[in-house]
Image (cartoon, rainbow, N blue to C red; front, side, top):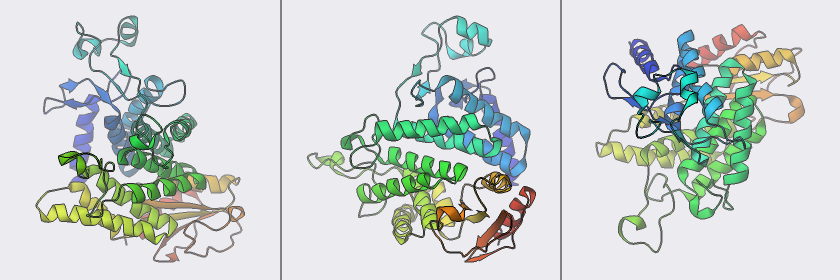
Length: 386
């Protein structure tokens, strides 16, 4: 039943994808998806790309992959600055005299011949984190190196240009007074996404650093995580901590996944602190659907797959390509090349293998090894469905 509902929703939402340039419009004001509001926002692209990639990983419908590619194509073709950063949004209308319904009905050549909907060329840390994580997810199923290269470049630019002295991410500038939970959180999620895509430990290390900043600077002792520190000189509402619900759900999920990947108890504690805030909201009859997902993840291990083999071994590379496309975002994925030393969590002693192998693990025990990419999802699913 849930697959039918999801497939119907995803099929309808494809009507909001610009058929010429790609990218998804903000919403439809008609129930059959035929009345798009033509603005293209980064958060819409983020959610849509992740949904279509996950749908493709589960059901292997080429239409879902095509939708994700169309959205990613617009980001790559229209929303990248020369620096490698991503811009923020594109307006709905080409101007007061040409509304979106007229402009977006044109061919590519006709669009380029005249005025186009303006692009907001600000580059914010949060929006760049969204774009990086989404394009990395699309890379995971396509292997398109251009997507990964763009994600890496935007990640490096954002750290270099928006990281504040306190270690967090400034929204529009690299200053302590502009750091916000959403920006640091989005870049921590981007770092984890790139770790999944590449198994390069530097990305996991950066995710750890940013999560530690969140726990230090955004924790509200009363529960949950604040958008930013309250202004001590302010009065009334501005003197109180402001907490955004979706960001708190995402923070719980980030902390929990990092706890699983690093075996650092402090991250588990941080996740439980955020969850206590979400539980309190539920007890007051405020429905937060994302809290159910966060709670489910807190209560169970993630799908866990480890590739054992050298990074320069084509057989190990092929196994990792299969592993990173496993259909869940709640995934602990590792590449154990003994030349790099112990794994970050190091809770399992993997045997010496004569050839590259994949293991699926749970509760400190692992499956028998498999040696071909087509077997990887089978062993992980068997453990994940326990």
